Length: 335
Ligand code: TYM
Image (cartoon, rainbow, N blue to C red; front, side, top):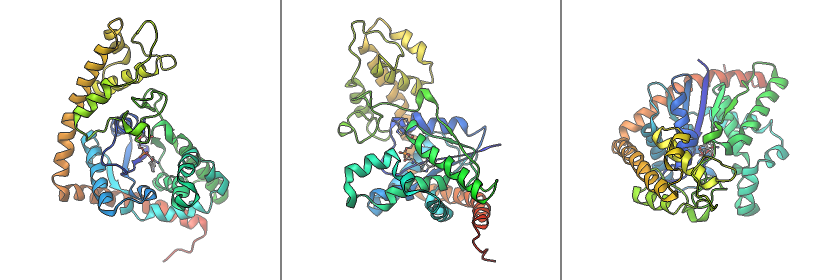
């Protein structure tokens, strides 16, 4: 079996529907066909200087949501990035292979650093994609399932892997392929169907959080911005009907039904019916999800044991890969 790696940052108290549809649900679908590692990337979250107690809590909450979403810790390796020291170590080696300009061209870095100013921007934010490359190369991952916004970071990872193979010999690194499923790779903000769903838009009113009160989700869906055209047709057409198409994508993801079949059910009846039923479908998805997540969170010792076991299994894969890359770089073996 080929290996896959992916991760999410524990930067909020909850994941949102974009994280679920674009990433987590894809991870679940892939875990039988691949040897999968799913990581809570807590070191990446340090770039926003979280409160230590909150970071600890959010790391567990993120892991609990992986489990609630269907990641099976028997079949997949579920772990926390900082538990495997090799991530940070390999990041240094890769930082020494990354051009300053190359890292500076990352659009996420450009956007965030522009908002924060030179002194508000940390060196960690700048080297963030290098740490992400280390996450992936450390496991010789062949495939990386992510949303559209990670495409450029994946391209950097591939360039670094190829560079290592050129400089230190073939077989130094596996060049990973992105796994980005077009139909779900970008879930849009409910208030602005041209922007990706993310807490940084419009005060977060267009975001559905997986662990929030489902009543808020209902409100957000009913207030969703739709497309004004004469017909009020319900059909999947992201170009001319971005708002409705986004609602159809979400509807399909939470029910498992086909987008076209859902559109056919509502076409000619107007947007209101679609929103009401979508709100019901999202609640029907959120309630059992939250119940499962809360069950995992109610027993932190058991959750920590699952994560410790995952870290042990991750380390077994990471150590020989790390040894190989260290050796190729010419670092003197410790013994
Ligand atoms: P993060 O934590 O921002 O997001 C986690 C995953 O959710 C996807 N995503 C979305 N997908 C569809 N629609 C949206 N609106 C949406 N918003 C977010 C993201 O594409 C991502 O797949 N740098 C990564 C974390 C990371 C990582 C890695 C990923 C660190 N190391 C190694 C893969 C492999 C990030 O910040 O994702």
